[in-house]
Length: 209
Image (cartoon, rainbow, N blue to C red):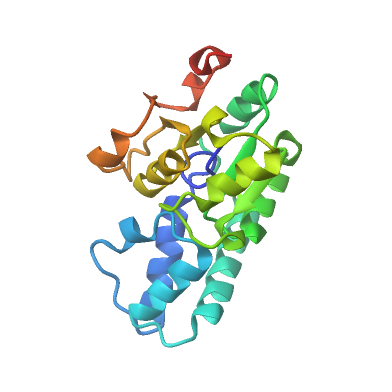
């Protein structure tokens, strides 16, 4: 089970840049812990949070405009993480792959189509499609359900604190690939079954397959 943002796509800096500018342009105030709080939230959750920061428009409109700006950025340049396509294809040769992401469906589809990885995944889930975003386990549980597998038989690949907590709460073993700019909290990292420096280390041998 792959996460998307921060694992396959180096998108967190883009999300931060786009949302920080959006908040500033629409009367809100960005806080020191805003980016950390936003990581892992579903679309509805982060749009509501930006509204709470003082953005003067309804959350649905906040989401529509921010996601539109993100899609434009991805179409102009897709910032894939180093080794991401190779890791997906390498593991896809040996295992059934799923994806559970906090990104909206629109952006998941843009990333997978642009990277030519769509056919590698047998199930993809946006937390827009479940009740709660990360750190709740809903997205990972739904991905397992769509694959018809037991969550305890799954290994998740995550980078963020909320993502690690989400996969662990779903009962999955978790491999952490910490992002150097947005490292997970020590208590979240402690939930990891394995910690690797980059995606090149993701091999069938590591997973025991």
